[in-house]
Length: 111
Picture 1 (cartoon, rainbow, N blue to C red):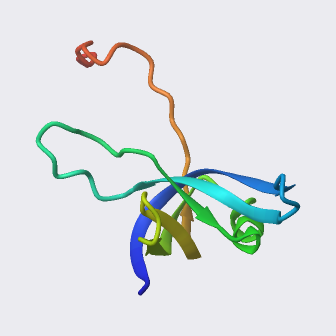
Picture 2 (cartoon, one colour; picture 1 turned 180 degrees about the horizontal axis):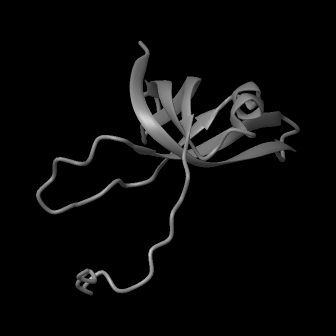
């Protein structure tokens, strides 16, 4: 079963290597944050998360990130730790970062 969520794709890295047993492993990891904020009382903001994906998806997204995307994924529950695997990204828009200067506790300037 596939799920879909709107995310900010933050970064991605690809891998291509052989295991000690000679098995070739190819794929990528993607780091993202869900657009919807956490609803937990003891957590604020957007917690970055990690998922795996096929190398073809990496090739599609590599020149577009950081970006806002609809992420389609599955969750593999067959291992001890559930694993999220991205099956597709629908690109929505680029993300532009803006730096702010000052302390989080600093009052904004009055004009």
